[in-house]
Amino acid sequence: MDKEILNELKKAIEDFKGENSNELKAMKEQFARMELMVNQAAAGPPLSIKENLHNNKINQVDNHESFSVKVDGRIIPVLPKNESLAKYFPQNNNAAFSLADFVRGAMGIKAVGATSVVSSPALVPEYVGSMIIDMIRAASQVVQSGAGTIPIVGPTNLARVTGDATVYQHTMGSEDISDSIPTIEPVSLDPKSLVAAIPLSVEVVADSPNLDSVLNLLLAKAFAAKLDNLCLATILADSSIGASATGQDPANWAGVISAVSTMLTANQGLPTAIIGNSADFITRAGQIAISAGTWLGKPPFLSAMVELPTTKVTAGTAILGNFFKGFAIAVRQEMTVEVVRWHQYKSASHVLVAHSRMDGVVLQPGHLFIQKKTVA
Image (cartoon, rainbow, N blue to C red; front, side):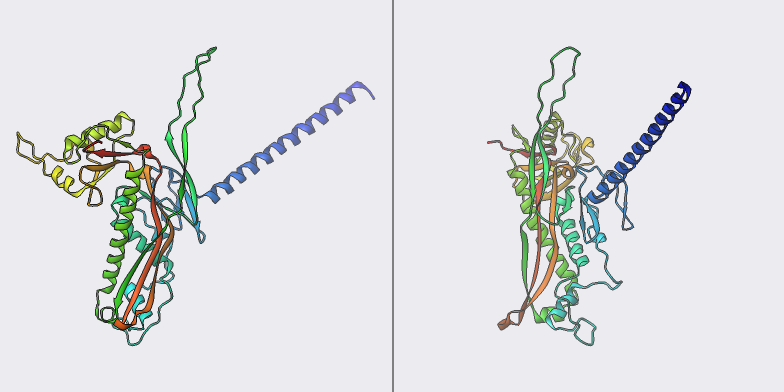
């Protein structure tokens, strides 16, 4: 066999190896892309892009963390204050659900305008519970400040940053880089149950045509008040959140501007909301410019800041910041509503029991600030 034939054989072998090597590489790259797509689908879509979930578009938001949970096959992301939870739990039919008629049916009372008693299910449908959650969120000052809602299906841990990393500029040939370890802490999401037990007499349930709106308003207001109490107490007790070092009175705009100046010094950015005492809010709103005799009003650079008065924060204290980035409401269980029949039979009274597991958690303390008139 001459040398020319050997060279041709060698070339053919090298060509075969190259072609198969390229095909193997392409197969590996395709597999990696498929694996990435599967992992992304399982984790849920990021909130930084517009997606269409169950024909419902999620608006692009300034999200603090991509997070979603799958409930009964539905992917539910972190919800901003204007995003409805109920839309992810559509009702099975077009008939409107009445909480009042549910109670009447459970108590063996005819619904208004009905000719016979219609028995109620043991519990309200899933979509009704999520609608009540939405009403609670709408009545909550903390949610209206911008705090997101995180649905969870069990105990969950997230991470929060309490100390930033340090970045160094390197000069070639120099040893000018030090270890930089940011402080990252786990955040446990496992809210306790919130429960309301409401006695209902047979007469009130049978004779009140506005019972449905009254029950919805009652549940939303009561649960929102409790949720706000818990959330605000959590924020005020968190030592990782920055606070006034000197007196900054939230009852006047000079004090608020001073607090915002402290926030900017800490690179926190302008606050999107302030939650403060109702009396401080009225005093601040009533400030008059001495020379002109007109209302002083909110400074233009804070025009986008939402002011939320509440009696759940003591006078002389306020909470400012970007609440969507800094705080969230964890909801582990949808609102469940049931009727305990003849709980107080001597007075012909039943009890409406509503319960859900929800609570607030500080996610990123660096996005919140506690303003104080008096510093100890």
